[in-house]
Amino acid sequence: MVSAPSSANPPGPDQAPEDLAEDLQEAQSPTLARDQEPSDSPSQRPDYLAKHNIQYENHRSVDWDLLTPSMRHYAETKEINPSALLLYRMGDFFECFFQDAVTVSRELELVLTAKSAGKEVGKIPMSGIPHHALDRYAAQLVEKGFAVAICDQVEEASQAQGPLVKRELTRVITPGTILEEGMLNARRNNFLAAVVIEKAHWALAYADISTGEFLTVQAEDLDQLTQELLRLQPSEVLYPVDAPDIIGLLRPGEKKIAEKFDEVPDCLPSNLCYTFRPRSSFLQSEARSRLLNRFKVKSLEGMGCEHLPLAIRAAGGLLHYLEDTQKETPVLLQPLCTYNLTEFLVLDHQTRRNLEITQTVRDGTFFGSLLWALDQTMTTMGGRALRRWLLQPLLDPKGIAARQDTIAELVKTAASARVSAPSCATSTTWSASAVAPPRARPMPAIWWP
Figure 1 (tube, rainbow, N blue to C red):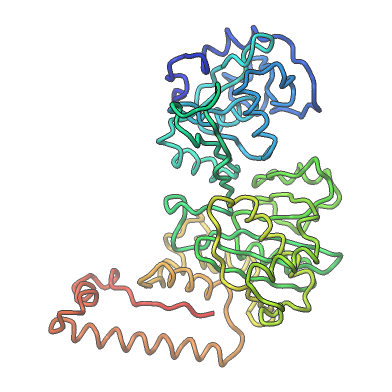
Figure 2 (figure 1 turned 90 degrees about the vertical axis):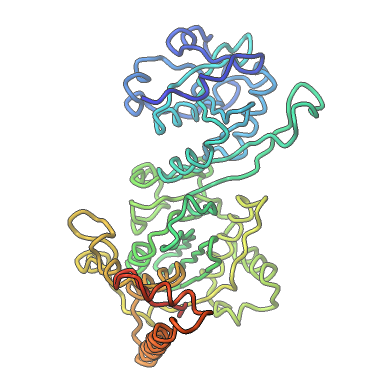
């Protein structure tokens, strides 16, 4: 068991962590001032937490007027992104309170402590991490399918005007909006997708904000949508809903929660992470205007989706989500590209699994797969392109021949460079690879649609 870093923080006027068993039981009964949300059930907590009767586990289950100024600000900030885990900077730590403290303690195996939230409120759950370890712990939470909101100090304590240091939301990290290199696999895309479904028609838009790729497709047959999502394996899927009480994040394997709502279709694979968004973000007029303004164009004809209303809605809804979550870091995207499923050979999920294209059947690992054996690319861009080619083979003979000619030219150029490398002082890259073992001597690759 790892001790909670927050418990090592010395108690002060703004922080007083103590033992959970002694302090949480002293808390008074909650004053309900807002609609109370269901908290984590005891069966979902570790044994050392399930035995405690945790009070004020939800930030809405207490009258905010009774909270200390810092806890009131925490609750107000939590309301901005209720579905994200809020990491709140306090001194040298990022702290979590209420239901987020219980979740972080459970997922990161940290000791849950308590903090005084006001004389009439008593103690509330608290857990935290050192500020210098933020990226490491945030990566673990995102990998488990959580969204993480970072509320950081934006001024020095010596410059504070008033009793509190100014804090603001600086980042919202979700599985599909990761930009940190240490949290990404450079040889595969980290896609954020958006889905719009109208009866038997559907549209899918997806983007990788770390590379700028932005594509969309519209078609019929919901089974094709399922297969396309399974091929892409997006880290996060946006889906518009009418019910405001389920706006939030649905982690992989939690689709049973969404089954309570008839508007969530069965064609969405249960092994993906879903973020429910209001339908207002996917209105066609707003989505079209957002696309035109983003790419500084007067028509979507050049992007191939002028007459594809569902594709426009999906792409516009995705852009709206990026604007909401990436306020501090504007995302650079390539112009929207529209493709047609009839251009490619469709390999269903079971076929890809049996062929072991990207992972083995026995243990589901990349080592030993077809892509592992073939990937001799020199760059990460080439690695992503080769993965895409294997998972989405072309049907057009001219396109296939063009790829073969391109690769043949690269092989010929690489061979010529290796031969001339010893006598050419400027060919340091090729001379280095010429002495490498055959397996470690990769061929360069370029991007090809």
